[in-house]
Every structure is written in structure tokens, then in C-alpha cells.
Image 1 (cartoon, rainbow, N blue to C red):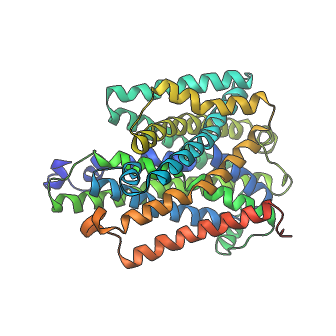
Image 2 (cartoon, rainbow, N blue to C red):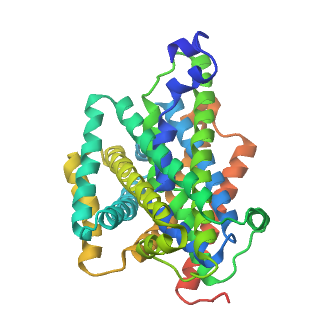
Image 3 (cartoon, helix red, strand yellow):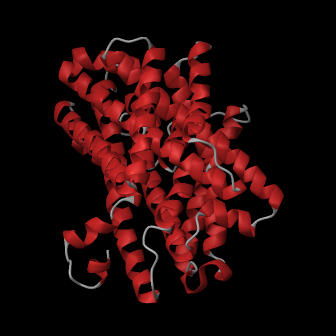
Length: 415
């Protein structure tokens, strides 16, 4: 990084040393929750909800860039700054909500990997869950040998997911003209489309990712002066744009594949297991295996990142940490309960994303508030136009969540 700032490295060689935080965070935007919600969206509405995926990823990139900026400028993460600047009751409330969000996150990530392992190796689901837990913990232990090694491992798993969906697009019969047309037409067809739209937002703009990104950047490269800080921020924005852009394309690919494969004759397809079994006769065994491989890579990597975020949030809000194995155990318990009680796991995945969408405004509003505070950000406080964009994004999420809750409790229903 010093060589880059000194002008001795240029081009791609200048970007690579700063790459890492946004790549790690991008895992949250292509986790098994995204698989579940995007399969349902594509199967039921074809290309009709592609616009929601685009909006969600634009909001995600905006807020992740701001989270990274917070860590770089202040040297502290979002949870720490909330503890310092907000009243104690609000801090405890936010910590509690963040822990609920962490459990909802892990439910999707942990179950997704377990489902894929159980299907591809014909194992009972609980064995797939145990194997996923072991693989996640093993990946977390890599951090002891240097965080850069963990970044590279997670980046490799992200690459696996991306390559798998690129291959799926070559196999699935996608109507590119119809997809491009509906991408530009924002509408929600009925009440179920509203639920899925909220789920897409919850699966894409992840609460724990907003906390984690500020933590990954706060100590990565402490700038020695303002000139260095400005250049580090510039490289951070580039990385966020590239990493989240790729994550957005993968999400679009998920919906496109589901629409092309299932919408014509399997609109009520709602489960990952059914999607796998339906893919084999429709597109061949290769497409089904590729789908499961991408799901395993997604589940293991995103569960690892979720555990890291949980540790950071707890430490930031209440100055306490617990052993990684205990954090791993606590956050995966709801997954075992869901399976033990006999709930449909894919339905649980989708509802976990709706829970995330409802908890999302808390870190979003906290981030907006801190970035606008001159005492916190100094000369780097959010400008007028950026503030308008962030507030508009938060209002959009809040409106969608309110709409979802009203229709959920029967206040009204779309037809």
C-alpha cells in the first residue's frame, strides 16, 4: 500500500493491495438467503422483480461505501461509534436487534450450505449441518495465520459462486429481450411480490455487513496524513463499486436462471430442494450439480463472515467478546431448532430475509446520523447531495417494510 501511495505501483497492481474488505462483505450479498428469495422471485414472476435486485444493489453499494468511509476516517467501527454517541438504552436496544439479525442471517447461511451438502452427497440434513459448522469454524481459524489469507479464501469462494452462475446462464434458456424490458419497469404485481421485494432488500442490504465493513477498514491502513486518507478512500470506493457490482450481477443471474428455467411451467416452485430436483430433467444433471456447488461455497463463506460480524458487533456495543466456537454454536442453534421442529427450511430462509429487511433501518439510520455529524467526521461529513441519496434510500426501505407489515397483518391486500 505504501508503494502504491508513493506512485511505484500503478494500474491493477495498485488496486490489489487495497482489495479485501469489500470482497469479504460482498459474500453477504450472495448468501443462501439470496438463493432462496431469488429462486422464488424468478420462478413466480419471471423477470418482473429484476428491478428490485438492481435497486437493492445500488442501495447496498452506497451504504457499504459509507460504512468503509466511517472506518477509514474515524479509525472506529459503526458499533463503537454508536456506543460513544448514542444514549445507553438505545445502544442496548441496537445490540439486541443486531443479535436477532445475526441469528436470522446465520439461519439462511448455515441452512443453505447444509441443504446443498445433504443433496449432493445424499446425507441427512443434520449431518450436512454438522459438516457446514465444522467447515465454517475451520475457515475462521485461518485468520490466526493472517487476515489476508482469510480474505483470499473468501475471495476464492466468491469466485466459485460467480463462475457457477455464469455457467448456469449459458445453460438456462434466458429471454434477454424480455429481461431487459422488465428491468426498466418498476412494479409490484401483488401482495406476494411485495413480500418477495422486501425479502430481496433484506437479502441484499445486510445489517451485519454495514457493521462489519467499518470494522474491516478501521485498522487496515491507518493514514499518516490527509493526503493518504483521501487516496485510501478513493481506492476503497473503487473496490466497493467493483465488488458490489459483481455481487449485483450474480444476484441478477440467480433471478434470470430461475425465470428461464422455472417460470414457464413451475411458477409455484418455492424450495431449494425442489429447484435442484427440477433442474435435472429441465437442464441436465450438470446444471443441478453446478447449482449445489455454488450453494455450498456461498453457505460456508457467508456463514464465516456472519460469525466475524457478530463478534465485532458484540465487542463494539458492549465491549465484550466470546470464544469463536461459542459464537458459532449460539448463532447456529436456531437452525437446528427449525429442522428439529419440522419447518420447511426454504420457507425459513425466505422469512429470515424479511426479518433482516425489518431490522435493517436501525444500522442505516445510525450510519446516516454519524456521517452527518461534524464532530465525528470532521471535513469528511456527508455532503448535501449524498445525504439526500442516503436518506431517500433509507425512506425507501422503511416504506417497503411498513407496506409489508401492514399487508402481513391484514390491513390491506394487493390483488
